[in-house]
Amino acid sequence: MVEIQSMVPIAAVVDLVLGIATLSIISRSQDVSANNRIVGCTLGWILIFLGLSYIMTSVLEFRYGALSDFSSVDTSKVGGTFAFTAKNLLLSSSYMLMVLLPFFFPFRLINRDWDIWLLLGGVCLASVAFTALHLMTDFMHFQVESLLFIPGYVILISMYLRFTITEVRDKDERLRKISVVVGLLLIGIYGEAMTYWLSQVLSINDIFFQRQTIQTAQNISIASWGGTNLRLTLGAGAMLVLCSAEAWRLVKIGVSPFGVMTFVIFLVGFIAGLADIAVLDVVRSCYETQCESFPAAYSTWYDFTSEALVYLYTPILFMFILLHYDIVDTKRDENRWLIRIIVILMLLIVSSTILELIQSFLPIPDMISSAALAIVLGVFIGWEERIVNSLIDDSASIKETVPDFARPEMEAHIASPRLFNIVFGGVTVFILIISLLFTGLGVLGG
Image 1 (cartoon, rainbow, N blue to C red):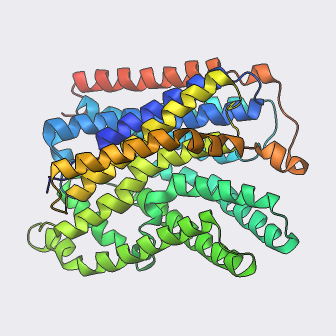
Image 2: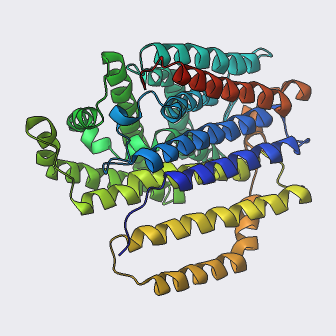
């Protein structure tokens, strides 16, 4: 067996590669609609912000070590460092883009010339506001930005229910494509919280939150607790809605790949809730006597479920949305070769990581795991073209799928990828400079 390694560095590579590749393809996709450019740039910068945040987390883990519980870092050691400050501020910026994404995809809801400035200006103003708040309060109110998810959450849930119910009622298979992409967005944004749905329903996540607070020496506020608890509640609610609707659709129409994925996540959350109940004594030990370590099987379970979903599958899910819903121009030859490289690279990274995780609890010799990886490599190389073609050939934009729901597009020159890159690149530079400055001045006490 091998020692379990953090998946954060792998997630950083995956997110950055996908984010940069997405922006590169978007810049060369001159024929796509203005709305698709906005969505592509937004998804690309979400991945870049997350990737940069994971790089900072990797630096903290390498230099100071990570706690064994869910790869969290000990803020009593890292608080006030440049990497810790930048990590949290970059994560906040990715949240702001996730908050505004439902207003543009799958449909552009506001449909005014100024909505793009709402997106750009909103992210800039929110980044400045939350940067000032977090730096002045030493991140005591971190996660309060989760409160801003409520409008987009309501939009996505309402849209999913509307198109699922209409599909079943009218037997209109076109509408399935809309409900699926909305469900994928919900999983991409709230996927980790979905795996804790039973624990949230049973109101035992607060006990885990108390343990983590003590273990990481966090000085939190009611606003921070409220933001964290809200995010868990939104994830639990989304999971129950998705599972109920997919079960109803299964009875009325039949099984679907998205339905199977929903039931798998539901089952993961159910087993996780039972596992959380089983280790409550270990959790309470942290504030009754001294912190006891979780059993190895418990930590391994979350390596394969919650962490793998956040660090590995969510970026791949975003890439699936980009390709399968024709957000980028997949028909041009100069884009197809880059897409093929990205797909095979992602498949290899995920498969090698899963093999490494399997080795963490099964006594598999390195020679056998190397042979297994070689077999997987051969399969992917042989089937790579077919995998890519299946994604691209069946791709269709929302406008092509349901033209009766499409709304007039803005002028193409308004949604310039260069404008997005300049604005969000400026936000990134601002965060890095302000983090370096405040850390150097000793404002954060570290």
